[in-house]
Amino acid sequence: MSYEHTEYWIVDKNINQERTKAQINEAGMWIKKGEVVAFPTETVYGLGANAFDEQAVRKIFAAKGRPSDNPLIVHIAERQQLDQLVTDVSPQAERLIARFWPGPLTLIFKKKTAVAPSVTAGLDTVAVRMPDHPVASALLQAAGVPVAAPSANLSGKPSPTSAAHVRHDLDHKIAGIVDGGKTGVGLESTVLDCSGQVPVLYRPGGVTREEIEAEIGPVSLDLALHSEQETPMSPGMKYTHYAPAGTLWLVPDRSRITELVARSKAEGKRVGVLTTIERQPDYQADLVIACGKRSSLATVAADLYESLRAFDHAAVEVIYAETFPAEGVGIAIMNRLEKAAAGRML
Ligand code: TXA
Ligand code: MG
Image (cartoon, rainbow, N blue to C red; front, side, top):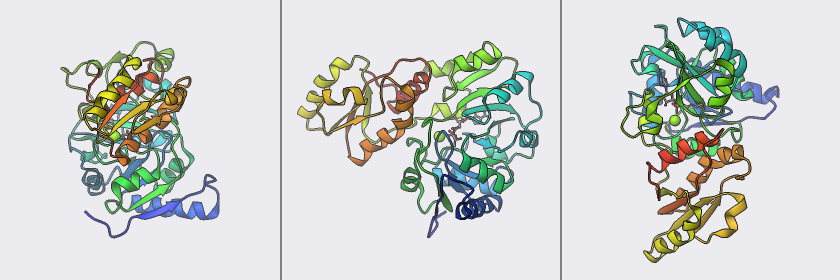
């Protein structure tokens, strides 16, 4: 489907401003009526459609080029909307909801039949989260229905952390974009399956495993997170993701990067380096991107996707990236970098 014009609403941080209220209400009505609209959340921009409207949800898959076996996350504004979507909420899930919602934690439950079939890609479970972003909350209120929303990027590309990224990927492919500025966390939500006996972590994200376990005790890890052999429980984790157009290599021993850059230059390639502010002056390449501060991994997470996209704009052909400690949000950062590099490590 192609749109002659994609509506673009630039909204104020103050969602009580009259003009902003009117814009958000309009965008919410469009979603309710069956259109797809991109909007900011605290993690990344989402591409939303009414989760009860099968035709609307299909437009999401078409716009993104998303494989139909990859289910979507449903976004809600209030706890009571959860009961429209799921059959049972375990005491553990209730504890997590009380502690982390609104916030970057997606929980998987057994679903009710009202949820449009495409949302769950035929599974009997549904993923739900309550975003912690004033514009997202106001939009969900205005829509008045639960909103299915994957990240608002073309399938396979880095998730969008600004409305400009969404426009780059989806202009003329969707009805509208709500521009609420840069997102905060910068990486997608943590996904935890609460539909069985023991909760299973499918995707690391803004809420860390340590934080979850401090609340409810041990959770198990989807083995596929650390192995190429296993088939992931979460369908989305099996696809190459977040990938820049150039070939990305992870280089744990960063002292080798200078030599690798020289070698690629000698081969006549356009070369990029992904580092942090502290070490940016150490490198010479066609494009050296400082992605946040190593001393604060949250800043690295916030800038990661923007940094990966920057290599595309500069038509860089090979990228050498430093790696990060696998602790706290560093686990999510390394998970996304490993996927972006399709496992390539030197
Ligand atoms: O932060 C986020 O989660 C963002 C914002 C927009 O909320 N959304 C997002 O959606 O990242 P998406 O579609 O890019 O990722 C959803 C992930 C996929 O890996 C998908 O396979 C998994 O959640 N998922 C959804 N429903 C599932 C289910 N019923 N069972 C297992 N995995 C599921
Ligand atoms: Mg995504």
